[in-house]
Length: 281
Length: 292
Image 1 (cartoon, chains in turn orange, brown):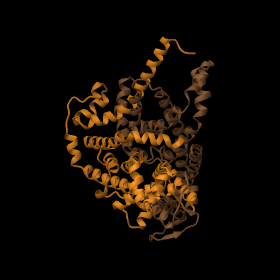
Image 2: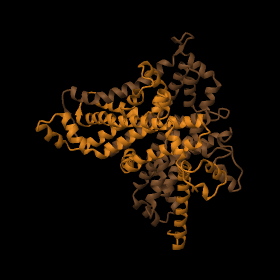
Image 3: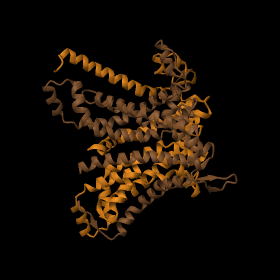
Image 4: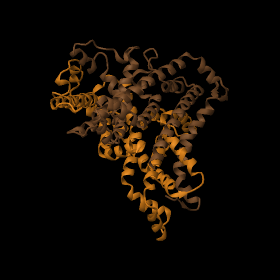
């Protein structure tokens, strides 16, 4: 039964009202943090207890908290997180794409078993192995080095899988033609197939970037000296150690939020397409 | 597609860096946990074989059992709850009417906020005396709440905070499933006189079984290992009410420096995750073999 036009209008209006309420619950907390970073320290909690429109709209804007942040360990942390994330993306994309290429293109013994192993490694969340991984890193004498933060995260089963799926879709004739022309497999991989795989590279890069940028447990355990501090650990430290410096905390939290949102907003189209295609299509 | 037969060293060279990485940094730690769970550290700092002692100690330790209980309780509630919320969101933004694309994108934004940052944000928002959430409750004439400071509310609050971050992420997967249901099915049922609730029960839910199962398993794997909010906000308290297993393993390793115990807990965690991973692999395989 189709509802009468009037009933339909009411239902539609209710639906939009519900969507607005949900959006408010999900977005206003982020907005409040961002606003608190640029309003005077005296205003931050005043309008948190006395809730009104001023809670969400600052009366005055100030950069004092941003200056406080720039004098803290946050710039160092952003630099470290960038180094770790970008190195992981660059090196990780290469080695995982190469493995995906091998699984897609070559015949070799134990292929099925090795591929099942790759699948299993990405079904197992990284957090599950953090503590024994720390034992391993200590044995290698890598604690408090960039290597400890970067190397364990390079090989990524899900990225291998995504590249394999993409390379499987390239027609066999293209590879054969290139072989006839005398190209080596390495040249084919690097010059022929990689330039074709833009969306897969974008997705893989975004996934590895976010994983490193968001990493908290592992850097906390493996490399937490002031020289190697990363963004997430720096912010979590701020809240446990120096509760007095609220303004600086809001400024650094806002910086971390905005820096993570930019690549997401730029690449989310590819991300959503690849993610929604993987479980059930 | 037929694979190319080439000398073995070629695929080996392509595979070596990634497979070596997975072998050393994924399989390696698993073996270390399995073996290390049988070791202990003497007062002089030597590592010695202690047999099943770590596990026997765990089995007799009320703190460990309490953290198992909290972890199970947390997961029994948070996973179904998150998925119901994600499903609600997906249904809400399913029909692509005016402006819906904007709402879809908006609902994804919390997923860009890391779990550590989520913890920091909500520990400020939910601060009982100066936080804006209690400010809002007071403005609405409701009594302020202790949230993370109360033994009775801390776990429920943790569940809500995790759902704030996770619901939009799982919504994408469910939305993809919902969009794949042919319109004609709903139209035909509507012509036969089925109401929207009936269509949801008889058409939507049965066809969504696979995406729902996938999301449930993947979500459970993440929530079983939840660490950051416990570390940042509650430190397991009050009175152990949020002492999740991962935090216990961390405490054993880095607060009490009991290496054998922390590796034994890691082995328990790996065993649970192993079961979940095998389930996930089955679902994943089934989905892909159907597609290929």
